[in-house]
Amino acid sequence: MTLNTRYTTPAIVLHWLVALLVFVGFPLGVYMHELPLSPTKLQLYSYHKWIGITVLLLAGLRVIWRLTHRPPPLPDSVVRWQRQVSAVVHGLLYVLLLAIPLSGWLMSSAKGFPVVWFGVLPLPDLVDKNRELGDLLVGVHQVLNFTLLGLVILHVAAALKHHFIERQPFLQRMGWSKQEQL
Amino acid sequence: MKPTIRYWALLAALATPAAHAVEYRTVLPKQSAISFEFRQMGVPVAGGFKRFTTQMVFDPAKPEAASARIEIDLASIDAGSVEADDESAGKLWFDRSVYPKAVFTASQVRALGNNRYEMRGTLTLKGKSRPLVVPVTYRPGQNAATFDGAFILNRLEFGIGEGMWADVATVANEVQVKFRIAASGR
Image: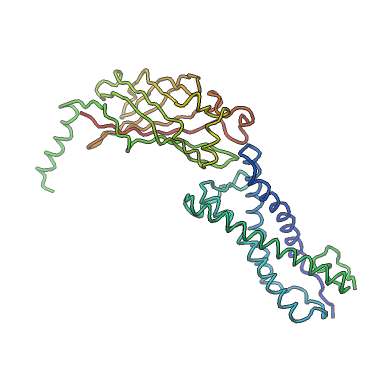
């Protein structure tokens, strides 16, 4: 019997691509919205939106992949409540990775700025221009993002704890190495 | 409908323009609009001006005698967002405290046929005057006629968006301007 201790390669690639984009897009969003209007600000907003739409696409693929592929089993050391929390956190992470770009896209539509992916592909407006809705969605986008930040910290901390403190083979689940690190 | 009624209606329709030529002088502001669209980072942004005054005289029987003058209050701009409205007032854009208005004066109108006209004139914006040729479509109506025109304004010719904003890769040079002037005739 071969013990499957890694996610499938497509899941791993998607996980790290999305992680990379979130780690760029999140601070970019925090930084850019305080800037006074300038060409740089317009450029950063566009890059942020391109990143967001890419996350939406990749996270969509990732959710489909997750629903059709079983993740590797957790080590026996992970106790029942941790398994339950893990399931909830992973579920929320998937939801947020879809909901956050969507809330941004909705915000952009409500503020009257269509999203043109990479400056080339115009995406449809999800709602009509509406200032109140636009302002509301700014708040929604922020709350969802800071919820994501909290969950990502928890997610990373748990993985590190299992691997380094409990000394269970854990990081290889999302790692590049195909070798068992038992 | 009875044939006779249709006959009289047709006759009346044909007879009206010839019977008394209409001269359009009274502009209806609520049915008139000036809008524009430009691209920033490839994204179309729509805007417009809410306040402008139009003086015009147009008689379709004597288009060459037509005159028009449009004055736009630049403070009434909708540039797509409050942030952009505020920014547009500054020195790099309209420099509105010095140049509060944009003025277009038509100097020549030429009939192109099919209710289409070519209007030549001068646009003055931010202290710079440039000749402008605008195709205009005239649509006679029951109570008012409409005059629709559209042209491309190259913002940099007027120094609109100077300094850091002169980079056309971020904000395009071309601004598509459209207007509709409604006027009642006598």
